[in-house]
Image (cartoon, rainbow, N blue to C red; front, top):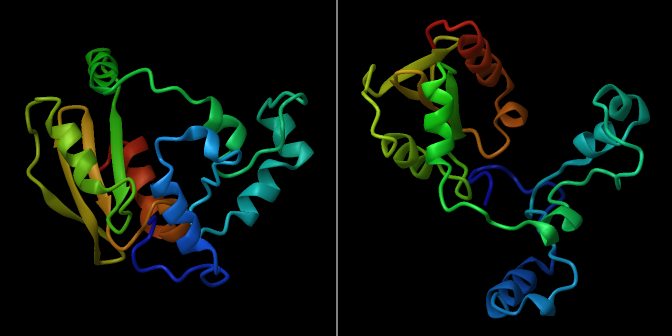
Length: 185
């Protein structure tokens, strides 16, 4: 569930429950499903799909012509994905040791990639806390919360789901601008 309170784009299809039941029932039998059907229910990615499959956009992004069309949660990519690492902590620590700044952000209504897991991840890096957990504002309203640990910032966006820039564009823009210019949130 990528956005707890967001209406389901196009309504809920009749097979959603069946698909979820079959995925749970056959989760240990990969050969059961020929198509992983990983597109989350209630997500409308038509605009992104159309834009990313335009020839001029693919040329500008240096996408080779031999690749299949872009699709959200691609079965082609998903079926070949192999988990190589159980944690990315060491990679983050190496980047931070080189002086790079990092922003880890979540919409607080995303239950799939939830903010609590990322908060625990950042805290688990055992870095010195440089700011307390505090609010940040957008348009004189609470936009979420953030905390900094040296060069890494953990931040939530209030009321946003998985697709933060799509579902909370104003707060997302301020978040990115603040991060890129190293300005207060």
